Length: 448
Image 1 (cartoon, rainbow, N blue to C red):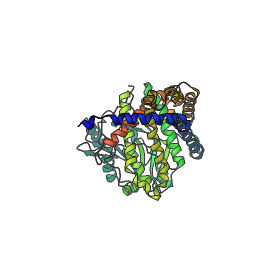
Image 2: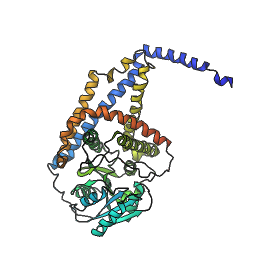
Image 3: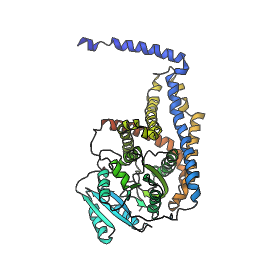
Image 4: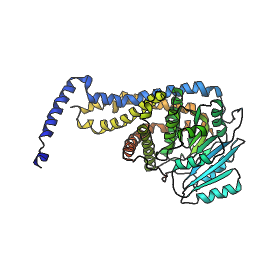
């Protein structure tokens, strides 16, 4: 056992590293700390302008021509039946209001299928009560918690319609949203899904106000940009329309994926189906307003994204999947960026890469470069809120929350870096085939 205690190799490694570091310092072009700091700084700066450019292209190409159409309905050539699917788990406090909103859809042929997925509260009783009052409501009861993917698949198989719309049990769907979603399926037979435009309902705390801007400047802007560039990373699980034929073609939702919305988005696009973004399909949702709830939610989103990167890596070798290559590459680079931020914040200050670590962090300190990043962030929010504000008139407009966006780089960037890494490790530890079931979610603080 003495050879196991011999640490001579440690000293050899230290000597090798000191020599290597000295060489790297003599050749600034190859200094790791310089390259890391530049990548950590310039990558989000570059992507901010990529998203802004794509968002403006989308606005000019598709939104500007519509004018002020928020309160209007699109003129459709036909009105096929639509099935709205509502998977519910412990939604006793929200599902009544959700269904009452659905009953006011400005669409002539709608059925509502509510799925009680093993709820432990009074959700099932409320659903049966509403079904007795309204004949267009059907209730599906699953005795145990099977997960959202299983609930959606069960309802889709039982639905009478070719066009399906899925919303969450706490979501309030705008009355004209169904018509706007159906429009895309009628215009293009190759459209497999349409993602709607989620808006934040609860805005009583700082986290709630910041998320209003985030869903506009980050979520909405990225969806617009990705649609302009060809492919969308994910539909919004809280509001999305589907063509049943497309779902059947890809095997419906995967029950073992933590985020069924990201998974079905990749399955559809890898199979050749298109995904569209419809900003007029508004849906008001509840979001976490505590740091603990936000951490759990974003960790789950990150885990779902990493699971998709692992599962569909081989599928990308198919030439038909070439349109997804850039999207996949961008996701991988973003993942690497999160890990490198941690390296810069935790390792570089120790002097592992440089004898003067403060130089490696100069771009992250109060400096003109960090000011440029903050200004770019505010410009991105200003552009997106300008585009998106007309869709928020019911809530008083999102532009009023612009003031709170100054906190986004401080609060959310650090949270997103942490949740990305946490989600990555969770995805690595998860066993393939393990069922993804419902968990209790933070729905924020609601004003009475």
